[in-house]
Amino acid sequence: MARGKLDLDPVTVRKARSLARKAGKPIVDLARQHTTVSVERATLRMAGLEGADGDGIPWANRLLDVVRADVGLEHGIALPVWDALVRHEAEDLATLAQKAGAGSVTFRLPEGRDAMRARAAARKQVGAGIKRIDSRRRERERLIRKHGDAPRTPWIYLIVATGDIMEDIPQAQQAAREGADVIAVIRSTGQSLLDYVPEGATREGFAGTYATQENFRLMRAALDESSAELGRYVRLTNYASGLCMPEIATLAGLERLDMMLNDSMYGILFRDINPVRTFVDQRFSRQVHARAGIIINTGEDNYLTTADAVEAAHTVTTSQLLNEYFAKEAGLEDWQLGLGHAFEIDPDLPNSFRLELAHALLARELFPNAPLKWMPPTRHMTGDVFRGNLLDGFFNLVGSLTGQGILLVGMMTEAVVTPWLSDRDIALQNVRYVLDATGDLHEDFRPAPDGFIATRAKQVLAETVDLLDAIVDDGLLNAIADGTFGLMRRPADAGRGLDGVARKSSAYYNPASELLEEAP
Picture (cartoon, rainbow, N blue to C red):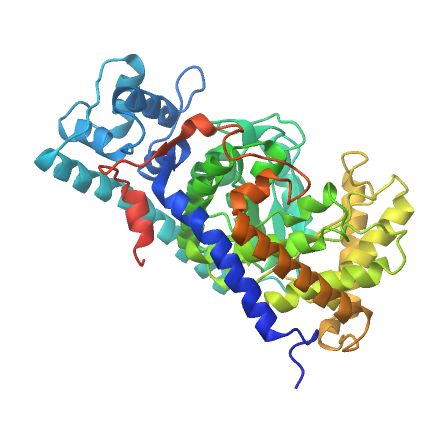
């Protein structure tokens, strides 16, 4: 009997997943043993701490810095902060942060009954934030029932980010009218390297718009208007990656975003963020996403912008399997796993389209219940807009043939100039034509059992098993340091943000982690 469209050997598939678990477990253990400044600041934000001082430094940063200077980071922020509140050093969290910033309060690590009182107070206030996240999830579910969902899959995912949130809003609403199911507001260049989250609505950015709580609120409200107008729920996505991954994930949950790019490997490889820092941050942020009902997007597509898309195909599959393990360990379900892959094979290579089909179908067969995120060609776009539009059409066709879940709209001017609005219109026409014309073609498409596509897919899976075997022997951190993924070498003892990591002490307490580990 055939085993799926590719007739993959179930023993080999089980072995691949088993190896991914073995390779990933030491990383999970590492994440459980450490905390970071962003995890602790996320806890403060969950408790309702907002705003910034006159210099634009968030109160969450100011409060954490003072607590860390007084008692260290290794115990967590909850006990010292809520001990101070229980001792009436300030009437609320915001005032305490202001006093800390002014140098008028000193923190201690409470013990005995004082510690018990601080724990109870912290759990109550942070718990209120988690209840708000729960409420926003229920609100999403109500709106989908009220307005309806996207009319088809894959969902059409379009980027709108001018730098000015007030300009983004009308562009996003128009994109939704033109057929976009998911609006992505990418972040201003370099925000992933900021160790703080800017405050307020922003009117300027570089190749993107700053991710702030107010920008999230404004865009979500605008797309709710569009959902009512169009009779279908329009989803919003942003980026929870970089040095503030846990904080942005928390803000996304509080403001009802629907998807978040969330992948530590992107930050490690392409932003040189310390591997330990970002694996710790990733686990906490994914626990928040799990609770909030947010779909994550992973960044395996980025490997193929630096490594050859044929030779490195197995590194994409390897990373997808690792990401699946990490995500499920953090509580995410299959429907939340927007695992990434991309149409990045050199189009001049013979059989390039058949190779793309093989790789895309392999991902679909390995993760049948995940809303895979299919990424358009970028590396081999040349500025020839006619060729580029044709390539995007082939990309869209693969998405339809292989039943992808989320299809990012490709632009014919991708990687050449910032696309014009007219470019977006043409690109959306391309997507709509292909998806409407092909319908449920993926139900009819079945490659020959021993043909080129099935053989190539099995070869990539075999290479994936070999690589996972080697990673289990050598360790994932060493594999990353050796340039296994995307040809980027990132050692575990280097990179940005390492000074923001601490090994937990025996007195460590974080009510957010405790509550997120519990069943909702």
